[in-house]
Image (cartoon, rainbow, N blue to C red):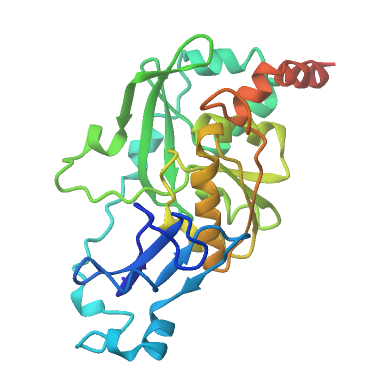
Length: 297
């Protein structure tokens, strides 16, 4: 755990460009901003690019140095709770394909062989009429799973969303740290670059269309999953945000670049309906049925 970290929200006025795009550094011991009028980073990476980290602040303005010396890493102050993991049997017991609205819908727009292969690769689970998107990390450990209900049209019923670790274990004792959906595929395909989308369904569909990429999902607009960023090292990463997440994901791209990740952004959803994602574009533009027809000829 680092002594100082950037506060994402709320952003304040940048000392360089004057725009409210400035994230100050916070002292994690006190929760207080560290010289917020100077020490921080502007998210206007191309237009401003102001960044003063704590080390530079202390070199130029030693009066801001904390009384304890301000060591950047303070392991002694951290109470670590070990991440809980689910048992393999929890996943294996869900792998038998049952009647499922989402899969039935995708069978009408995607080639069957590639669809079945993706179901196996992502270890898609099934229970009752719902589908489970398991989160398996780069080490092959099972963090949790998201159980969801889909309508016959392929749209998600947002009233039904359950986390599998809460379904099976005592939630008070289970310390969950989510990872990317599809993260386990990174080591299996060392030659492939990575594309990251928000929804599990989108990652699953895109993996069938663009086989030269590993498709991952964050599982949420505001889930950056920083603890999984080391798993992305050495690959080119493309972020493909939903229409309403472009600004937030541009900020995420800046943060990832600060961690020396090779990352770019694809704004294919820009200007579309609010909350549109890449899967919506493929479906609404009639692209998926064409792929199915080509494969079946």
